[in-house]
Image (cartoon, rainbow, N blue to C red; front, side, top):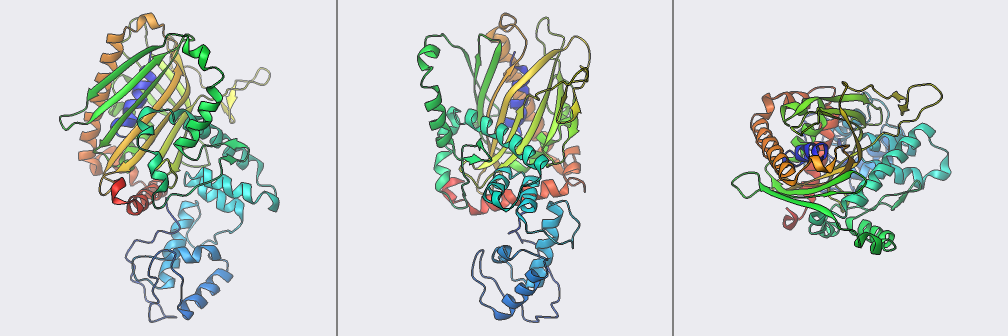
Length: 464
C-alpha cells in the first residue's frame, strides 16, 4: 500500500541559481575606461575606489543594473567593474529567462519573478508583501505564488515532525549565510524553521491529543543497510483507519552530490532507469513559473496480490531553502484539486484531467509528499535526505502483510541506491548528464549548482 510513497522515497533518498552575487569565473577582458582594475576585497565590502564608484553610478543610471546590487558584485577574483557587470548581468538575465544585454527591471514584481524562477518563492513573496502599497501585482502571478506557498507551508509542517530532522536542522539557524523571512507570506503560513513548525503543530494538535492517543496505531519500522560502508535507511510506516498511509525515512551522508540528486529527481521520465516496477513516468504539463513547477504521472506495477498496477498524478514544486534554517533543497508533491464546470472535463490550473493510462489501475491520491536534500561533507559531495509522505493508496491493508511491505521497501531501496551509484560513476556520459548540460535546462541546473556551491562555502566546518 505504500508502494507509491516508497518508490518516490527511495528515489529521493538514494539519489537524493544563477545568483546575482556569484562571480567565480575567470574573465580576461581589457578595460579601456579603467586600465588599472579596481579591486573589491570581499563580498559586501564598501567600495572606496572613486573611479569604481563613478562607473558604477553611471551603469546604474543607465538602467543596466539596480543600485542595490552593486555591493554584491564583489568577488574573490580581481575583476574590473566592466568584467563583473558584464558577467553578472548576463547570467542574471539568463536566470530570469531574458537575453543577455537586456535591461534588468528593478521593480518589485520583476524581482519577484526572477526569484520564483530560481525556486526562491518564499523570498519573492516577502518582496511582494513588503511592496504591496506600491501597486497591485499581476493577479495570475500572485495566485501562482500563493499556491506554491500553500503547498510549501503544509509540507514543511509535516516535515518538521520527522524524528531525524529534529536532531540536526535547528542548529543550522545560527550558521553563516542563513536568512529569515516572515512566517506569514501573502496570507499563507510558511514556517521559517523546523522548531517554529513544531511549535505551531503542537499547539494545533493539543486539543485532539486525548482522542488520538486512545487509538492503537498501526505502524511498521523498516531499517536496512544500503552498502557495507554503514549507510542506512531508517523508515517508519503508518496505516490509518481511513485507508491512507504515511512513510517517513532518512538516509545520512549518501555519496551523491545534491546537484546530481536534483537532476535524477527532476528528469521524471527517466525514473524507470533507476526504480523497479515502473511502467511509465513523465511530465504531463510544464508550468511557466519555474522548471520545477509541473504536473507529473507515475505508473507502477509492484508485485502486490490482486493489484494490476498503480497510477499517481501529482503537482510537483521545488524550493530553494538553502539560506534558511531548513538548509536544503525541498521538493513537494501534492494532489491536484480537479475542478469541473458544467459538463467540461475536470481541470487543474487550466489543464484537463488526463484519462487513466490504462484500465484496471488503482488511482493513488498523493496528499502530501516532501523531500529535503541537505548538502554535507567537506566539499558538499555528500547529501542527507529527509522524506515524509502521505497518500491514499486504495489498497486494503489485508493485502499488505508486514513481511511483504518490508521486503518491497528494502528491495526497492537497495536497487535504486545501487542503480544511482552506477549512474553517478559515469554521470557525464549518462542520459541524466546529457540533460543537465542541455541548453534548454542549463540555466535551471547551473543556478542550483551555484546556489549549492555558495551554501557549502558559507557553512562552518562543523556543519559539514
